[in-house]
Image (cartoon, rainbow, N blue to C red; front, side, top):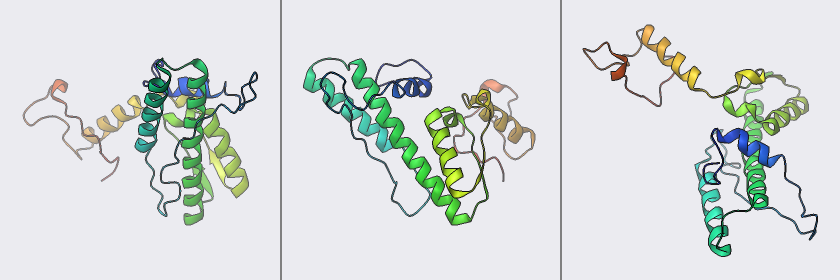
Length: 186
């Protein structure tokens, strides 16, 4: 979203643009799409990462700008947003399907900011129906920015005595240290 000059938060903006995508240009009847990778979609593990996908978007945008010597058009932004959303959704659905199969899951609980995306929600509904798995999704009002969840997790860990989030000898929250890979449990 930032690479295309879209406002923050980027996820909803990408989704809005993607929803405007039409597979063919109505005037020329030409396909108007781009092809982006589906990172790790065929790996045998359940891991995924979208850093390579974001890099592919960066290079695609640079290529378009250099070739045409101009900024992206609205149609190009729409097509890129659509392809990005499709790539992310395909990877998430494949990995989720693999996990359900591997662990013989009977239900699926999904949370986080990404579940606000309508395409992902719809795809998860189709997957759960296809596999006969009960799907639990939060109400849309609970799918926003995860900053609150992260703050609560840090607070609970601090109060539970499992980790000291403050520098030794201080009681000021100004001395709080960020630890990006904290676990919610020991």
